[in-house]
Length: 436
Ligand SMILES: Cc1ncc(COP(=O)(O)O)c(C=O)c1O
Image (cartoon, rainbow, N blue to C red; front, side, top):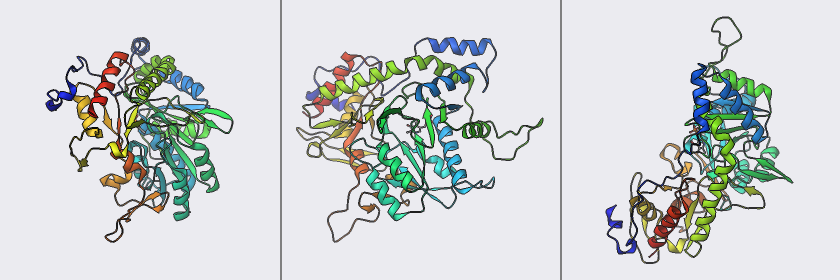
């Protein structure tokens, strides 16, 4: 690492005294009030006024009738996926998942929490390649997937880094194929999408919708998540499943498998104190994104894209994509990486290492699911059809793989909303000098 400190390209840059984070919690003081109130009133449990308040506030903000507070976004996604599985294929035996024997189309460029619930429910994830306009599921690849697997009835879709996917097209395709949508809006709370002529929030765009309050999200409870729906029946079912599936009997009576997934009233207290600041956080993140875009505009890079006509992201993370001809050699193994510098060029890992040397945190682009060792035997569908087994000893081209390309050439930049303009200017300067 110290090679950057002695590298003449970086002369004059001092490491940050306190670390500049990728995206860390931003507390405002009101969180303390609601946590204290919970403790003072002894509602230190998975029941209490903070949970009720958060469910009501976010349901109103997003524009759904019901929100159910859960321990994390992953729990919300699990129960959403299970609800979809039950609706499509019926109730499973206690030792079986609802998706056993069924394929599910999934976003490929996402965090694995989006799609782990497909495995929890014994389903088989089929990964759909990514488009370049928003870095989300490509509707054209989804069409191809339905040509290859017309029997599929469930699609799990995430909005990467807070930028909404092309939901108009995706919803139309799913409708045509009678498929349900689990929407993972964990990263995109507060992002807006133009559906027809109406602007709507992410978290309303699927049949079953989920958000996260993980510590790195746009607002946080240290943990926590919500299941969002307009269906009272679905909300009640999720509430029941999340509290060990208790029946209305005087003793512990169970007709279904249960989970301990309910949100804590302490966690909800933190979220409750954060909700009034959601719009402020989004505005700060947008300014960070705009400053990167401007500050890096003369380099051979672009920032993560979005279409302002149809989407207003929450700008959770700002990312860079290096132009192909500006990529210095970089080779990734399973757990390590090698790169060299070439004048006028750089690579994601050179930039990440340089940023880290000066005490700031970036991150590689989320490695696509179809490239993960755990899913290497699962199908991957691109705009060309089957994306597996395309390499050939006799033919040079091996086909498109947009996700692999963005992973190779991209990185996430420090996007913390407490980063000052001066600090961001230094981050921008470090990136610039990487291309020296
Ligand atoms: C896209 C995505 N889905 C799901 C999750 C899971 O949320 P949680 O950490 O609250 O379980 C996260 C983040 O953590 C995420 O980024």
